[in-house]
Structures are given as structure tokens and as C-alpha cells.
Image (cartoon, rainbow, N blue to C red; front, top):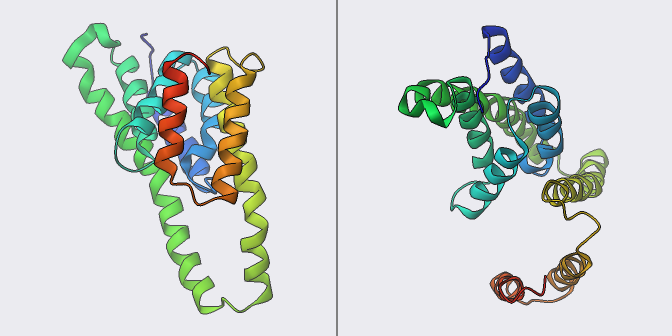
Length: 198
């Protein structure tokens, strides 16, 4: 995939990630639906497979959850440099994409988190602080569900794979109500997938 990005497009990418950074309640992954809307649907800077594989690769790799943002930036820059056909000649723009995406997603949320954490720790007994913390939980859960639905829909599986939905619900219930270690649940899900049951 090859695209043309002007200086204003790079600024728009930075501005979009700056704004999403402040909405990343529950982690950057919760903003994936809006990133898909912007990068794939509106701007056509990434393809659906690039978007989904960036998230999958980042989630499979060890390290922080925010790695998929770097991959989005890399792929946008790579596409701006002529795509994979351009080879190493596209790498400087890919590196620029990583830099812009990571600065955009990290600087506002890190600054806000630092300031808010210091303030809320000093005022942790206030009723408003306790209410805010309790009120954020349903928002985070809803954003994570929207992200999961988007990723399943990109694979063409939304509404078709009821065993996968059932497995997800049972796993969520087991995590919530039991002390079964998460690795056992991941291993079980992997074996069910390997045998083609989900």
C-alpha cells in the first residue's frame, strides 16, 4: 500500500493521537475503535489487515500494551514511503511515523496521569475522588468490549462464531469468580483453538 502524506497530514496524525491520549481510559487499546475509524475508514492510511495485524503482533509480543500504536505509526510511515516494495528507503518515514504516534499517545496521558495521581492521592478521602474511581469502571469495560467487537468484525467473525463468544463469557466469569491462574485459561483457549473447536 502506498500513500502520499503532506506535512499537514503528519500534523493531523499527531493531533489525533494527542486527543486520543486523553481518552485512553483503561489503556490505549480502548481507543482502537476510533483509531480504526480515523486511520482505515476516513484517511485510508492503513488497510484492515495492517490494522488488525498491528494489534495482534503487539499483543503477542512481550512489552507494554501501547506497542500497537508504534506499529500503526510504522505502517503509516511505511505506506507513505512507498510501502514494503520501497524496502529500506521507506524506513525513515516509518521511523517518523513511530515517533509521531508515540509522542502523541504518551505525552498528554502521562502528564495528566502524573498530575491526577498526585492530586487524588493527596485527596483520596474526598467523596468525589472515590465516586470518580467507581464510575470509571463501567466506561473502561464498555471500551474494551467495543475494541474486542471491532477486532472480531475485522476478521469477518462478528455474530458467526458463537463458541468463541461463549468461551469469552465463560473465561470472563472464571476470572471474576475464581482464583484459577490466567495461564491455565489462556492455555485452554489455545488448545480449543488448535483443535478447531473455537
